[in-house]
Length: 319
Ligand SMILES: Nc1nc2c(ncn2[C@@H]2O[C@H](COP(=O)(O)OP(=O)(O)OP(=O)(O)O)[C@@H](O)[C@H]2O)c(=O)[nH]1
Image (cartoon, rainbow, N blue to C red):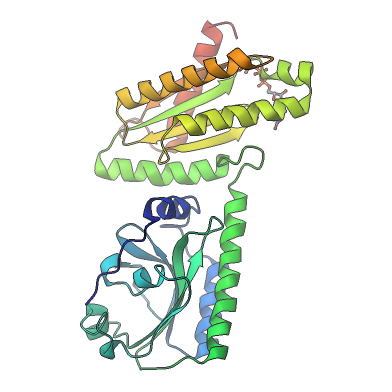
């Protein structure tokens, strides 16, 4: 058996997967529709939308695989599919040296035939597959391949819509909805693995004046600038979001207090450099809440604490 290789863009790929907020989510008709259709059109017993996470293939939608929600990535056929630009077909797994002794071939669900088309996120990263499975060997002709491609295109369209719904259009950051979903996921992981997390809540000071003095379009630019500075200050793995208006949040996971202090120093420096050249300065207040699994029941509780501390700082400085 051959374990699937890790793609060269793995870090960015996982980031793209995370930003879809799909992992460990509920079943959804919008995806089940396609797996049901695939099963019927190709007359196969099983059809899946599988997402390739770091260690597992998690099934967003599965027909004919009752009770199975995930497979170790090392055993998954789809782990191989995402390495390719196009559909991977395995007509008979028992005749394929990559799969003949794979436990999901020799044991339940006894896969003999596999055809999977990579699913790309709007950023172009292969986050999962739409695939067909059978317990009998099979072939696909050109027409079948085109049809599977059409179905996969439609699933990709759903992924694009999902991403748009969690994107703040002005700044390109995650919006409040996306932040809440990501924070829930990240904090759940920190709770399980006993890792630290810090939430920073930012609110611009005197932002209304920028709108009033320079116009709304300039206010928009100020928000975009602040978003860019936040993004360049924090790590790729931190969640940076615009919650609304002039409020932003950053969730740092697996970061020490020192990491957080350093990041805030970098931000202060970046703002200082920006302000030195700008027509008006960008200033902010920030509240910081350290995640405590006993104290914070959920992401909302952590956010509320950081908000309170931000407000306290704003008041104490008379801003
Ligand atoms: N240009 C622009 N302005 C926005 C946007 N969203 C909200 N605003 C404006 O942002 C302002 C926020 O007001 P406040 O919360 O009082 O902000 P502030 O002047 O920074 O006040 P403090 O937070 O007390 O310092 C309001 O005037 C909103 O109209 C946006 O997308 N673009």
